Image (cartoon, rainbow, N blue to C red; front, side):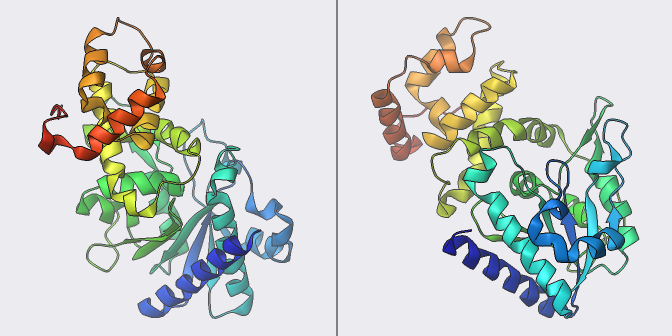
Length: 322
Protein backbone atom coordinates (compact mmCIF):
# COMPACT_ATOMS: atom_id res chain seq x y z
CA UNK A 1 0.00 0.00 0.00
CA UNK A 2 1.37 3.39 -0.97
CA UNK A 3 1.80 6.26 1.46
CA UNK A 4 -1.14 8.08 -0.17
CA UNK A 5 -3.38 5.02 0.21
CA UNK A 6 -2.34 4.58 3.83
CA UNK A 7 -3.11 8.21 4.61
CA UNK A 8 -6.47 7.95 2.84
CA UNK A 9 -7.35 4.88 4.91
CA UNK A 10 -6.42 6.66 8.14
CA UNK A 11 -8.51 9.70 7.15
CA UNK A 12 -11.51 7.48 6.35
CA UNK A 13 -11.22 5.67 9.69
CA UNK A 14 -11.02 8.99 11.53
CA UNK A 15 -14.15 10.20 9.75
CA UNK A 16 -16.03 7.17 11.10
CA UNK A 17 -15.19 8.20 14.66
CA UNK A 18 -16.26 11.78 13.97
CA UNK A 19 -19.62 10.66 12.62
CA UNK A 20 -20.14 8.33 15.56
CA UNK A 21 -19.43 11.19 17.96
CA UNK A 22 -21.81 13.47 16.08
CA UNK A 23 -24.60 10.90 16.35
CA UNK A 24 -23.93 10.22 20.02
CA UNK A 25 -23.30 6.49 19.61
CA UNK A 26 -20.16 4.44 19.04
CA UNK A 27 -22.08 1.59 17.43
CA UNK A 28 -22.17 1.11 13.66
CA UNK A 29 -22.59 -1.77 11.26
CA UNK A 30 -19.87 -2.71 8.80
CA UNK A 31 -21.37 -4.03 5.56
CA UNK A 32 -19.16 -6.46 3.66
CA UNK A 33 -19.61 -8.06 0.24
CA UNK A 34 -18.01 -11.49 -0.32
CA UNK A 35 -19.37 -12.00 -3.83
CA UNK A 36 -15.97 -11.73 -5.58
CA UNK A 37 -13.57 -11.79 -2.64
CA UNK A 38 -14.36 -12.40 1.00
CA UNK A 39 -12.62 -9.83 3.21
CA UNK A 40 -12.01 -12.58 5.74
CA UNK A 41 -9.68 -14.29 3.27
CA UNK A 42 -7.31 -11.31 3.45
CA UNK A 43 -4.26 -12.21 5.60
CA UNK A 44 -4.46 -8.87 7.39
CA UNK A 45 -7.90 -9.77 8.71
CA UNK A 46 -6.70 -12.91 10.50
CA UNK A 47 -6.96 -11.34 14.01
CA UNK A 48 -10.69 -10.69 13.50
CA UNK A 49 -11.68 -13.68 11.38
CA UNK A 50 -13.28 -15.75 14.12
CA UNK A 51 -15.02 -12.80 15.78
CA UNK A 52 -16.45 -11.57 12.48
CA UNK A 53 -17.74 -15.01 11.57
CA UNK A 54 -19.52 -15.28 14.92
CA UNK A 55 -20.95 -11.75 14.85
CA UNK A 56 -22.00 -11.56 11.19
CA UNK A 57 -25.64 -11.13 10.24
CA UNK A 58 -26.51 -12.17 6.68
CA UNK A 59 -28.52 -9.90 4.43
CA UNK A 60 -30.72 -12.65 3.05
CA UNK A 61 -31.35 -12.12 -0.65
CA UNK A 62 -34.24 -14.49 -1.22
CA UNK A 63 -33.57 -15.17 -4.87
CA UNK A 64 -32.77 -18.62 -6.22
CA UNK A 65 -30.08 -17.12 -8.45
CA UNK A 66 -28.14 -15.73 -5.47
CA UNK A 67 -26.14 -18.29 -3.51
CA UNK A 68 -26.33 -17.74 0.27
CA UNK A 69 -22.53 -17.94 0.46
CA UNK A 70 -22.30 -14.56 -1.31
CA UNK A 71 -25.00 -12.72 0.62
CA UNK A 72 -23.78 -9.40 2.01
CA UNK A 73 -23.06 -9.48 5.75
CA UNK A 74 -23.40 -6.97 8.57
CA UNK A 75 -20.87 -6.87 11.38
CA UNK A 76 -21.60 -4.89 14.54
CA UNK A 77 -18.77 -2.57 15.59
CA UNK A 78 -18.35 -0.61 18.79
CA UNK A 79 -15.82 2.05 17.88
CA UNK A 80 -15.03 2.67 21.56
CA UNK A 81 -13.52 -0.82 21.62
CA UNK A 82 -9.88 -0.92 20.52
CA UNK A 83 -10.41 -4.26 18.78
CA UNK A 84 -13.44 -3.03 16.83
CA UNK A 85 -11.76 0.29 16.05
CA UNK A 86 -8.83 -1.66 14.59
CA UNK A 87 -11.23 -3.70 12.45
CA UNK A 88 -12.93 -0.50 11.26
CA UNK A 89 -9.50 0.87 10.33
CA UNK A 90 -8.62 -2.32 8.43
CA UNK A 91 -11.93 -2.09 6.55
CA UNK A 92 -11.22 1.56 5.73
CA UNK A 93 -7.84 0.65 4.25
CA UNK A 94 -9.46 -2.17 2.26
CA UNK A 95 -12.10 0.25 0.93
CA UNK A 96 -9.36 2.60 -0.27
CA UNK A 97 -7.45 -0.25 -1.90
CA UNK A 98 -10.54 -1.60 -3.68
CA UNK A 99 -11.51 1.83 -5.02
CA UNK A 100 -8.28 2.41 -6.90
CA UNK A 101 -8.57 2.19 -10.68
CA UNK A 102 -5.74 -0.35 -10.80
CA UNK A 103 -7.85 -2.69 -8.66
CA UNK A 104 -11.12 -1.95 -10.44
CA UNK A 105 -9.55 -2.66 -13.84
CA UNK A 106 -8.86 -6.20 -12.63
CA UNK A 107 -12.55 -6.66 -11.94
CA UNK A 108 -11.92 -7.31 -8.25
CA UNK A 109 -14.89 -5.32 -7.00
CA UNK A 110 -15.57 -3.63 -3.67
CA UNK A 111 -15.39 -5.79 -0.56
CA UNK A 112 -16.56 -3.02 1.76
CA UNK A 113 -20.13 -1.79 1.34
CA UNK A 114 -19.82 0.93 3.95
CA UNK A 115 -20.68 1.70 7.55
CA UNK A 116 -24.26 2.21 8.72
CA UNK A 117 -25.00 4.35 11.77
CA UNK A 118 -28.00 4.99 13.98
CA UNK A 119 -29.59 1.53 14.15
CA UNK A 120 -29.20 -0.68 17.21
CA UNK A 121 -31.23 -3.62 15.90
CA UNK A 122 -29.00 -5.47 13.46
CA UNK A 123 -31.61 -8.09 12.61
CA UNK A 124 -34.09 -5.38 11.64
CA UNK A 125 -31.44 -3.65 9.54
CA UNK A 126 -30.56 -6.91 7.76
CA UNK A 127 -34.25 -7.55 6.99
CA UNK A 128 -34.64 -4.02 5.71
CA UNK A 129 -31.63 -4.27 3.39
CA UNK A 130 -32.91 -7.61 2.11
CA UNK A 131 -36.13 -5.88 1.12
CA UNK A 132 -34.69 -2.85 -0.65
CA UNK A 133 -31.92 -4.73 -2.47
CA UNK A 134 -34.44 -6.91 -4.30
CA UNK A 135 -36.65 -4.58 -6.32
CA UNK A 136 -39.59 -5.35 -8.56
CA UNK A 137 -39.38 -4.06 -12.13
CA UNK A 138 -42.63 -2.66 -13.61
CA UNK A 139 -42.55 -5.55 -16.11
CA UNK A 140 -42.75 -8.02 -13.24
CA UNK A 141 -39.24 -9.41 -12.88
CA UNK A 142 -37.04 -8.86 -9.87
CA UNK A 143 -33.62 -7.28 -9.93
CA UNK A 144 -30.94 -7.14 -7.28
CA UNK A 145 -29.91 -3.56 -6.56
CA UNK A 146 -26.31 -3.77 -5.40
CA UNK A 147 -26.65 -0.90 -2.95
CA UNK A 148 -23.73 -2.33 -0.98
CA UNK A 149 -21.50 -1.54 -3.97
CA UNK A 150 -20.19 2.06 -3.73
CA UNK A 151 -19.93 2.28 -7.52
CA UNK A 152 -23.69 1.69 -7.67
CA UNK A 153 -24.65 4.06 -4.87
CA UNK A 154 -22.43 6.83 -6.29
CA UNK A 155 -24.64 6.90 -9.36
CA UNK A 156 -28.06 5.86 -8.08
CA UNK A 157 -28.33 7.79 -4.80
CA UNK A 158 -28.37 11.31 -6.34
CA UNK A 159 -31.10 10.15 -8.73
CA UNK A 160 -33.44 9.12 -5.90
CA UNK A 161 -36.13 11.38 -4.57
CA UNK A 162 -36.15 12.27 -0.87
CA UNK A 163 -38.75 9.63 -0.04
CA UNK A 164 -36.79 6.98 -1.92
CA UNK A 165 -33.60 7.90 -0.09
CA UNK A 166 -35.47 7.50 3.18
CA UNK A 167 -36.70 4.10 1.99
CA UNK A 168 -33.16 2.96 1.19
CA UNK A 169 -31.81 3.90 4.62
CA UNK A 170 -34.81 2.63 6.55
CA UNK A 171 -33.94 2.25 10.25
CA UNK A 172 -30.43 3.69 9.98
CA UNK A 173 -29.62 7.39 10.05
CA UNK A 174 -26.45 7.49 7.96
CA UNK A 175 -24.66 5.23 5.51
CA UNK A 176 -21.04 6.11 4.86
CA UNK A 177 -19.13 4.86 1.82
CA UNK A 178 -15.91 5.85 0.12
CA UNK A 179 -16.94 7.24 -3.24
CA UNK A 180 -15.22 6.89 -6.60
CA UNK A 181 -13.50 10.26 -6.17
CA UNK A 182 -11.84 9.21 -2.92
CA UNK A 183 -14.14 11.20 -0.66
CA UNK A 184 -16.49 10.08 2.09
CA UNK A 185 -20.07 9.97 0.82
CA UNK A 186 -22.57 10.42 3.63
CA UNK A 187 -26.02 9.10 2.70
CA UNK A 188 -28.19 10.62 5.42
CA UNK A 189 -31.85 10.31 6.31
CA UNK A 190 -33.57 13.45 5.00
CA UNK A 191 -35.42 13.82 8.30
CA UNK A 192 -32.45 12.94 10.49
CA UNK A 193 -33.94 9.85 12.14
CA UNK A 194 -34.77 6.40 10.83
CA UNK A 195 -37.71 5.87 8.49
CA UNK A 196 -40.47 3.25 8.73
CA UNK A 197 -39.83 0.08 6.77
CA UNK A 198 -41.10 0.40 3.22
CA UNK A 199 -40.25 -0.88 -0.21
CA UNK A 200 -38.25 0.97 -2.82
CA UNK A 201 -40.17 1.69 -6.02
CA UNK A 202 -38.20 3.11 -8.96
CA UNK A 203 -39.64 5.00 -11.91
CA UNK A 204 -38.86 4.31 -15.57
CA UNK A 205 -35.93 6.74 -15.77
CA UNK A 206 -34.38 5.27 -12.63
CA UNK A 207 -34.73 1.76 -14.02
CA UNK A 208 -32.92 2.96 -17.16
CA UNK A 209 -30.09 4.12 -14.89
CA UNK A 210 -29.99 0.79 -13.07
CA UNK A 211 -29.80 -1.05 -16.40
CA UNK A 212 -27.00 1.26 -17.60
CA UNK A 213 -24.89 1.10 -14.44
CA UNK A 214 -22.70 -1.83 -15.44
CA UNK A 215 -21.88 -0.22 -18.81
CA UNK A 216 -21.04 3.10 -17.16
CA UNK A 217 -18.78 1.45 -14.61
CA UNK A 218 -16.99 -0.60 -17.27
CA UNK A 219 -16.23 2.64 -19.11
CA UNK A 220 -15.13 4.24 -15.84
CA UNK A 221 -12.64 1.43 -15.18
CA UNK A 222 -11.01 2.12 -18.55
CA UNK A 223 -10.18 5.73 -17.70
CA UNK A 224 -6.43 6.39 -17.73
CA UNK A 225 -6.86 8.36 -14.50
CA UNK A 226 -9.83 9.15 -12.26
CA UNK A 227 -12.30 11.79 -13.27
CA UNK A 228 -11.44 14.89 -11.22
CA UNK A 229 -13.52 15.28 -8.07
CA UNK A 230 -14.48 18.77 -9.23
CA UNK A 231 -16.32 17.19 -12.19
CA UNK A 232 -18.45 14.80 -10.14
CA UNK A 233 -21.49 17.06 -10.54
CA UNK A 234 -21.44 16.19 -14.26
CA UNK A 235 -22.03 12.48 -13.68
CA UNK A 236 -25.82 12.98 -14.02
CA UNK A 237 -25.06 14.60 -17.39
CA UNK A 238 -23.27 11.41 -18.43
CA UNK A 239 -26.37 9.43 -17.50
CA UNK A 240 -28.56 11.85 -19.45
CA UNK A 241 -26.31 11.41 -22.49
CA UNK A 242 -26.65 7.63 -22.22
CA UNK A 243 -30.45 7.96 -22.04
CA UNK A 244 -30.51 10.14 -25.15
CA UNK A 245 -28.44 7.64 -27.10
CA UNK A 246 -30.58 4.75 -25.88
CA UNK A 247 -33.63 6.67 -27.10
CA UNK A 248 -32.12 6.58 -30.60
CA UNK A 249 -32.50 2.81 -30.55
CA UNK A 250 -29.11 1.67 -29.27
CA UNK A 251 -30.17 -1.05 -26.85
CA UNK A 252 -27.00 -3.15 -26.58
CA UNK A 253 -24.98 -2.70 -23.35
CA UNK A 254 -21.83 -2.51 -25.49
CA UNK A 255 -23.32 0.56 -27.19
CA UNK A 256 -24.07 2.08 -23.80
CA UNK A 257 -20.47 1.51 -22.74
CA UNK A 258 -19.18 3.16 -25.93
CA UNK A 259 -21.47 6.10 -25.25
CA UNK A 260 -20.37 6.36 -21.61
CA UNK A 261 -16.72 6.26 -22.66
CA UNK A 262 -17.15 9.23 -25.00
CA UNK A 263 -19.27 11.08 -22.45
CA UNK A 264 -16.53 10.64 -19.85
CA UNK A 265 -13.52 11.33 -22.07
CA UNK A 266 -14.93 13.90 -24.53
CA UNK A 267 -18.02 15.54 -23.05
CA UNK A 268 -21.44 14.50 -21.72
CA UNK A 269 -22.80 16.70 -24.52
CA UNK A 270 -20.88 15.01 -27.33
CA UNK A 271 -24.04 13.49 -28.84
CA UNK A 272 -25.52 16.98 -29.32
CA UNK A 273 -22.65 18.16 -31.49
CA UNK A 274 -23.43 18.66 -35.19
CA UNK A 275 -20.83 16.09 -36.28
CA UNK A 276 -22.32 13.39 -34.09
CA UNK A 277 -25.89 14.37 -34.84
CA UNK A 278 -25.16 13.81 -38.52
CA UNK A 279 -23.50 10.46 -37.77
CA UNK A 280 -26.55 9.28 -35.87
CA UNK A 281 -28.88 10.50 -38.61
CA UNK A 282 -26.94 8.68 -41.35
CA UNK A 283 -26.25 5.48 -39.39
CA UNK A 284 -27.51 2.24 -40.95
CA UNK A 285 -29.66 0.02 -38.80
CA UNK A 286 -27.92 -2.40 -36.44
CA UNK A 287 -24.51 -0.72 -36.59
CA UNK A 288 -22.70 -0.81 -33.27
CA UNK A 289 -21.86 2.54 -31.75
CA UNK A 290 -18.15 1.73 -31.55
CA UNK A 291 -18.14 1.03 -35.28
CA UNK A 292 -20.09 4.22 -35.96
CA UNK A 293 -17.37 6.16 -34.16
CA UNK A 294 -14.43 4.15 -35.53
CA UNK A 295 -13.30 6.57 -38.25
CA UNK A 296 -13.69 9.74 -36.20
CA UNK A 297 -10.13 10.94 -35.70
CA UNK A 298 -8.53 12.07 -32.47
CA UNK A 299 -8.38 15.57 -33.92
CA UNK A 300 -12.12 15.43 -34.61
CA UNK A 301 -12.84 14.30 -31.04
CA UNK A 302 -10.63 17.09 -29.70
CA UNK A 303 -12.59 19.59 -31.78
CA UNK A 304 -15.89 18.16 -30.52
CA UNK A 305 -14.61 18.45 -26.95
CA UNK A 306 -13.60 22.07 -27.46
CA UNK A 307 -16.93 22.92 -29.06
CA UNK A 308 -18.75 21.29 -26.16
CA UNK A 309 -16.74 23.40 -23.74
CA UNK A 310 -17.98 26.48 -25.58
CA UNK A 311 -21.47 25.12 -25.18
CA UNK A 312 -25.03 25.54 -26.24
CA UNK A 313 -25.03 29.29 -25.77
CA UNK A 314 -22.81 29.68 -28.82
CA UNK A 315 -25.17 27.70 -31.04
CA UNK A 316 -22.66 24.92 -31.62
CA UNK A 317 -24.71 22.17 -30.06
CA UNK A 318 -28.24 21.12 -30.87
CA UNK A 319 -30.68 20.72 -28.03
CA UNK A 320 -32.10 17.23 -27.78
CA UNK A 321 -33.61 16.53 -24.38
CA UNK A 322 -35.45 13.36 -25.31
